[in-house]
Image (cartoon, rainbow, N blue to C red; front, top):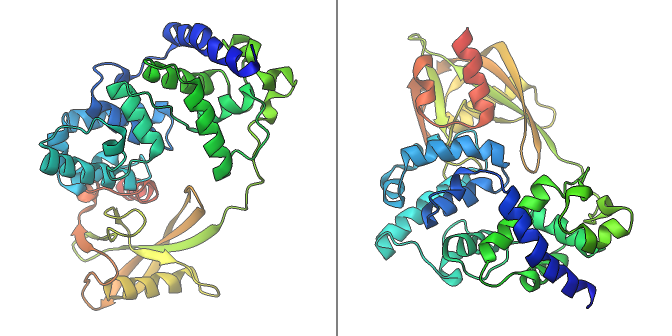
Length: 360
């Protein structure tokens, strides 16, 4: 029996029983339905289980069914998603819910071909939903599964390359326990999340240790192989808390097609080379809202890391010298009392500004 056959047998006789005995309690693992699986899988993209759990509870309380989600406004959906990040996920699931109601009478698609056609659903999410909700024989490939497979077979190619991902997907497909795809997928992901960790794997607790080529090599953490990361870009942003005589604050809504589309923000933008932050604020508010402002006192600096860049946002108070706000390079604008700011959705960076404003 070769290494692959031994590994396949160990998956069935060791990994699946291990998972049955050791799986963590998660809200989407109970009362499982296609809708709950779909929402949980979208939340778990780029987000840890402990971070996603309170959002899942809150989201399900507000939108207990697919039809209730479809009937909501996008702003309501974004508000429930607020702070979870990667907001295109929320916009896509709202769009998909409306499509399912309009075209399928609210019945969730139950084939891989139909599921992957939904907005925001790629091959991983389609396999996860198909296997967990409909027991389709589909193997998932996420970061945890890539790490487990790379170590099991001492896979020495750059795991971030498209060619490597295709090979690893084939490995996952071949290892899949037919008829138990949901348990197989969750077991592989659970193993990667709790035992086969990136830096300090607990190889002594691993049900697949005896067939792990990475462990036998003496350096399991050498796998998966990765190319050197490029330096993360850093941007500096200027933003303004514009106030009026009534003490209200001006906020702007980002255009739907922009990053963080549909969210509200304190207006501003990226500082250009050779430009002071104050000059940036004045320019951006003129371009975005058609107003000339007097930039006043400094309020705070917000630092935030996104997936592909880091940001440093310097925030100033400002007052309008001339002009009336109108949406030129934004979707909408509003004047709101500080006590009413949280009624609409913001990014994490802008929520930090609200925190400070509320304490003043």
